[in-house]
Structures are given as structure tokens and as C-alpha cells.
Image (cartoon, rainbow over all chains, first blue to last red; front, side, top):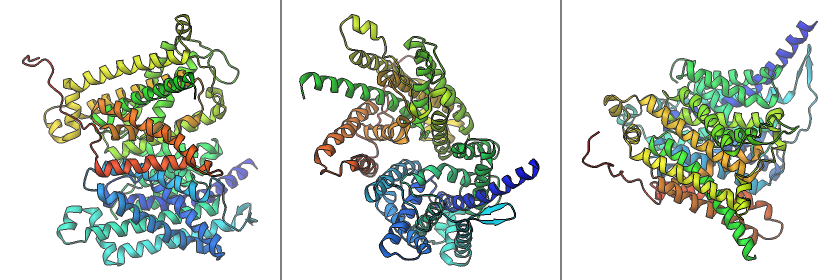
Length: 292
Length: 321
């Protein structure tokens, strides 16, 4: 009896883990791409996730459109915000050391978080849809939204994969990430590639934000609170390698949810951190091989 | 405001400046001299504060402790504890590029905050720890000074001590190696210096200084809760102070602490006076935006800060050692 009970619990948590993992993946791919092209850890990424979620929700509040439209609306909004930040701030300090961009992005993150507070107030929002009755499959409860989240993440990642492998600019991005100098002498338009990187990074972050908002609620610190797991996913997958981020995101998501079997749920970010530290000690290049 | 009110405000103002200046000097050791990126200052600050509080407070049913050690024991404990955390993080990331250090430090800071908030037996969780005595309050009372004034004197004394030490370190051969690592790592390695060890030493010393700042904060403020160690107060303001003042320059760290704390606390007055009724709730985020934008402007227009770093005068000229 108890064995079956534990198995059910484990499977149930694995479902939550895959859902969380697909959200983390979207954030981690962006972090990884930005690191690959611009060589710095983007500390405002969590808050870009928040901005995406709030823009999506704001769009719904203004238009009363169907819920799913929050996803494209948030993605477009956050992509524009990301490019604007790059053009007004990051671009001007890019020529100095990349680490200066790191502290700048930390400040940008705080600005974004505060702007969300100023525009939308400190209230907690949630996407319309209310509490859903889960479907019971065998002994497992499956929340309809979780299926949608997973499906949306798969669609977004597949679209990104096609973009990176089939389009000229996508290939140019991979070339720049592989070998910056070589890519530049072959005449790759660096500024355009950087702009596309921000567009994609912002859109992916918003994807993570809207899906995270659908899974729980919207708060001004929602993105900051998952920044550490997102970084952990990127590092476990090998930072600078977006495809590794998928595996890293899943691994971190599963570990965080399954850890609640024996740890306080509030320690979930700490679990992500410990896995990241373990990877940094054993295999700092990430546990998955190959470039993108 | 009456004269006594203004005086009390100034005492509190300069005490906070002093504590932040100590944190900024600690960061300068790590970032300014060695180019190591610590974005989890709040974590080291918290370790120092809680260690000292646990060592010195009287017995309480709400958290571990009851040791009632004197203030100085608390300070020493705080410095040792935060140095050990620094050693752990530094050892893990010493071989890696500084982005990993940044992520690891924010990880440890957030994890420590979770531990402080969740482990009630240790820290009384979100309800916080109180009854932390101000330093040498009996002595200051005996000579007719308030305990707040006494705290300011103690903070100033520690700040002077830390400043003297980091300034000596900067001019010493050890400090030269740190700057050499920052400027050109391969060349320094080729000169036979053990990069990893020097880096780790600087990181641990910087962490210990931050822990000292934490202990002084705990004893001045008298109350600790996880709120005080959010990245905004613990980490971000310190970074803005160091960058505004001039990283690599200890005088710049001091100046930055004064200037940024003036702007930060001054903006509170301006906002509470200037914001229309009903909008006062926006004062907090608007102040953060102000400081955040200020940082970007400094990074874009004057990345070297108000007081740029100067090459130190060689000490003991003409003598070879």
C-alpha cells in the first residue's frame, strides 16, 4: 500500500516538475543565448519574466480577449522592452568589460520590478479561468492548465529551434556564439544579431512569465523568485548552449518538485542552487555536451 | 524639527553611512581590487548580523542562544562566520569566470535568506530577533552619552580601523598582485603568482569585512528580520555606492557611501512631501527607480566614478625588501 502511495506521489510531483521545468526552460534558453552572444549573465531576466506576465495580463484587461492571447501579447511586449533596454543602456556599455553589463542588468532588474509595482500596484493578480477541476487519470490529478502550459512551451521551443536552424539570421546567431571573431570577419551583421537575441530572449522570458502566471499568480517578485532556478537550469545545461537549457530546465524543475517529499516547499530555490553548485564543482562546462 | 530631533537624525544618518561604508570597503576588496563579482553582499551581511545577535542576546524562548557574550565576541564571531561562508563560495568558484561567482553569490544570499525565514528555532524566522544590545551602552551612559551616539562612535572606530587596514593592503605587494590579476590574469600567472590563492584570500577578506558590517548593523538597529537582507538594501545600494564613488579607490568607497546614502534617504523626504495624497505607496518603488537610473547614468557617462582609482605611491621608497 505505502509503496503504491509513494509511487503515486512521485508521479504526481513529476508532473508538476515537468510543468515547472518547461517554464524554467523558456527562461534558461534566453539566459543561455544572451550569454552565448554577449558574454554576460543577464540578471534582469527574472524581471523580464515578470514584465511579460504583466503585459499579457494587462492586454487581457484592456481587450477582454481570450486568455491564450496573453501569451503572444506578453511575448511581443517583453521583446520590445528587452530591445529598448539594450538600445538605451546595454549598447552604450557593451564596449567595456562584459561584467559591467552584469551590474547594470542587476539595476535594470530592480527598475523593471519597481515599474511593475508603480504601474500595476502591489496587488496580486491572476489570469482569468479560476480554479480548475483536475482530471483524474488513474490516481493522478492533471490540471488542464498544466497541459496547456506544456503544449505552449513545446510549441515555443520548436519554433525557436526552426528559427535557429533554418534561417540565415538564426545560423548567424549560432556562429557568433560559437566563435565571435570568426563570425565577425565573415561579415555577420553583429548589431542585428544582438538585436534579434534580445527580441528572442525577451519573448521567451515573457513566455515563461505568462505560463508561470497561469500556473500560480502574478506578483512583482514572481520573476525574481525564479531567477536562481533559471540560472541553475542554464548552468546545468551548460551556459551559452540553449539546447542544454532544455535538459537543465527539466532536471531542475523535477528536482525542485520532488524535493518537496522531504523538504519544506519554500526551500525549492535552494535545491536548485545546490544542484547548480554541485555541477559547478564537478563539471562547470555543464553536464550536456555539444554546442548549439 | 527641534534641534535634538535633528541631532538624533544626524546620528542615525552617519551610523548608517558608516555601516554602508564598511560594506563598500569589503566589496572594494573583492571587486575594486581583484575584479571578483559578489552580488550576494546581503548574504554575508546577514551572516554577520545573525551570528553576532545569536552570540550576544540573552536567553529567549523564540530562538537559539542565551550565550550573552560581550559585544566584541559577537563581532569576532560574525567576522569568522562570514569569512567561512566566503571561503566556501570562493573555493567553489575560484577557477571559474566571474559570472559564475556572481550567480553563486546571489544563490548563497537567497538561500541564506530562506534559511533565516524558515528556521524559526535558529533565528525566530520572519518575526525577527530583538533585544540586541547596543555596543558598550553602560560605558557610554556612564560618561553621559546616549547609546545611539555610542553606536556611532563604535561604528566610526571600526570604519577607521577597516579603512587603515584595506589602505595598507592596497599599497602592499599583496594588493599589487590583486590588481595585477584584475588587469591581466595570464601575465600575473606567468609571473609565478598563484592566482586562485590570491583571489580566494581577497574574497575571504572582503566577506569578513561585510560580516563585520552586519554585526555593527545588528547592534545598532537592535532588531533583525529577513526583510533587512533583501538584495535591494543589502546588495544593490552597496554596489551603487562603490561604483558612484569610484571602484578600486577606498576613498571613493567612503565618498560613495555618503553621497548615495544622502540621495537614498533624502529621496524619502522629497517623495513623502512631493507625492500627492493617495500616491504615497509609490514612494518605495519610485526611490528604487531613481537609484537604478542613477546607476545606469554613472555606468554610461562616468564608469570610473567620482574618485577614479589612482596608482598607489610605493611605500618605503628606495628600500628593497
